[in-house]
Image (cartoon, rainbow, N blue to C red; front, side):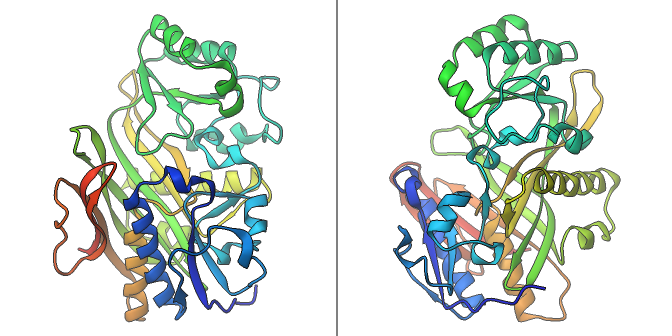
Length: 369
């Protein structure tokens, strides 16, 4: 067992993504930092951590805006999961959706370091699909999947359901692939997978902080943003002490038990396929829906090894368990409300309430249910 680290300071880290983040994202991570600092009796350093100057300080705990590569983590003195809220990947593509599927063929185009046995490891934990890095492979994979129904093309770096296109015919596939610059396709890749209808998206995950772990299952809620577009509206989580095994021991409906099992298998497969990967937050979106032939399908869509939309509820669970050592479970939620900067109820843990210069009026909070 590794020795517990003494943490004296918690700080956010935005790195190269600083200019890309909305103010509500930065405010949310700052509030996460304050709450994590209270949990471990440490200081929160607002506005610090934008560079590696403090890397030699072993008592720092980081909250990055995104997954870090091993090189980025080393520059901050991070070498293990208990030094950050998030994850570290051995290669940049490992932190994107592209790792959720295998290649079209063993000799298909792929970036250096690609784990060629990943498809066998993932097996049926994911939906039918492929990861492609060339137009030729994209067209071939798309046509293969279209034979069984509509497909979904997914930008591997898209978040909150953005950057996705549903395709139902070969002509649509041709146009969609023609619109992707070849250099972008070769560098980042594209996910092509079967499309599901009547979807329920489960959030399955585990978080480890300061020698304690929680695991949870939950569901996501969609809402409309200030432009009338569909946006993430929050997550409701049912949390227990422990990891995936503790979650599997709960009384779960058959579909939910299958979703939890597939998330755990996906987690194990990716960590085995890419040595050097480590994370304290491991969250997986799992879809339940009907495929193009009307059959029920359950499969992991993607991973998140960084602070995310459900993290306010995750930290609320840690706070509740710390306050009540005899407590074994809690149901809590994160909520995002557009159009109202003061929507949080009095008992909520507020993460943001204001007018974001990009998205407009917004409230973000966590609350026990």
